[in-house]
Image (cartoon, rainbow, N blue to C red; front, side, top):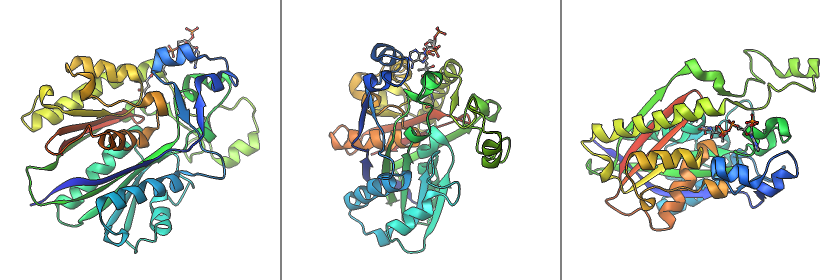
Length: 335
Ligand code: UT7
């Protein structure tokens, strides 16, 4: 029997900082509204042609591999979580295998949006616990900025999302009281369209339909979010899935040393913090600086928390995510 543990973390964000004031020059919005409703002060946007979802993922992965103290050839499997792949197919997992020059190991792409990294960690954990693999590279990376509606029509979504990448090396741990104790995954497809990007897709509108119709009012290729509905579900599901993980391990909220929630909205994190009676030191938030980077948000936040010395050996670390699908999940770690 093995456990798995995170032995290396890295993140990369593009240099280009976009403030709320910058966005207010493109659409009817303002710094006060964005900060009050979301907590976001600024986010990063790629410079087109410089960074892609894959290149950012590769940069984050290189740091994680180096910090893990292993060689790229020790990686047995790649898991890549994103909703914004470079290509419609193939997914970015194989591009990472190529660009990092890793031998011909398996590469899996995860399509679980904001919960993507949590799902990816769960996959890595199971492969390691079964004994099949020893070192799994898990990446979450997103480029949102080039696909958003940067007009007043899209402001409910476009002020929220940002670009960036984070990565973790998950490795075999022989001591089963340490490392990833459990992972918990859920979905509710009944609400699939409440936070979605419908086109291009084979279901309703493919690229050829979009070109043929050439409709300037077509919104189907921009992300849609029923913000209040998503918010209401998020606070419930975050709380449930954290409790589920704690209870399975005979733990309670007061045992948490560090909660790293998906950075969806600062108000959601604060709601969860209050509900569980956690102090500011027990919850890590960085949405102020990066916005919501979906699958990248947890690995970026986890890396920063670790770099700042906020996560230490023996700590109980909880990861939790909720997002499009709906999908949600948690990871309970004894660091
Ligand atoms: O990561 C995946 C999970 N995602 C989430 O969990 C996100 C959950 N939802 C939210 O975070 C919030 O619902 C939002 C931040 C998206 C929106 O906040 P809200 O407090 O729910 O605002 P709202 O959508 O109800 O909009 C309130 C008003 C509207 O105007 P009226 O109808 O009251 O006149 C909007 O048109 O704010 C307006 N509005 C804006 N105003 C300025 C919407 N977006 C903006 C904007 N700037 N960017």
